[in-house]
Structures are given as C-alpha cells and as structure tokens.
Image 1 (cartoon, helix red, strand yellow):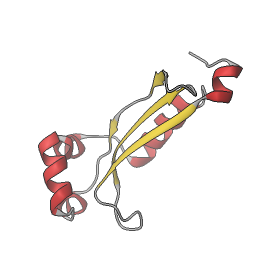
Image 2 (cartoon, helix red, strand yellow):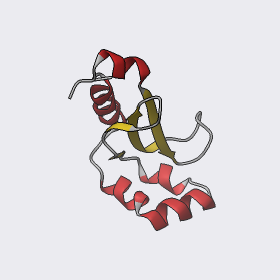
Image 3 (cartoon, helix red, strand yellow):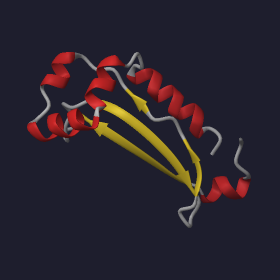
Image 4 (cartoon, one colour):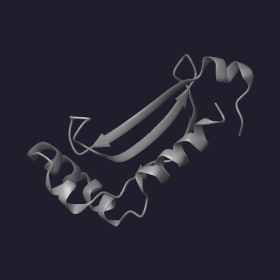
Length: 100
C-alpha cells in the first residue's frame, strides 16, 4: 500500500530500538520496530519487527538490567538465532518507509 499525499504529509514515523545498552557509541541495536501513524496517532501501518543478530561477546557485555530484561522477554535468544544483519534491518525498514 502506498500512502496518499495527505497521509504522507501528516504521517508520523515511530521507530523503537532495543539495544544492548544506552551508550550509542558503544552499544548495538538488537531489535527494530516501526509504526506509522497519522497526526491523531491512528496507526496507518506497522513495519517489520526485526531481531538483529549480534556477536555473543556484545550480548555478554550487556549490563544487569539489559541482560535480565532481554533474557526474560526472549529477545536475547531471538537475536542469537537471527540471520538478520544490521544492514538488512536498515534496508527492510527503509523499504517499508518509502511508502510514506
């Protein structure tokens, strides 16, 4: 589906990133999800939700909160099993957003 001109002009793009921590210089993205809404926050479209494979040493370096949170939610295991690279997740997200 391609958005109309009015939808595109008023669309808000929401990107949710789960990361190994809060320092963007050191930490890496482990999941990305995207939602597009109108100005009234009505959902127009939901993009792909992608767990991004990261090396074991990066996952092992997470602090206690992230280790517990992502472990209990199952995200850490999904990241380990994922074949999606950061570049692949970026491309899929951009392809989805081109409609808006």
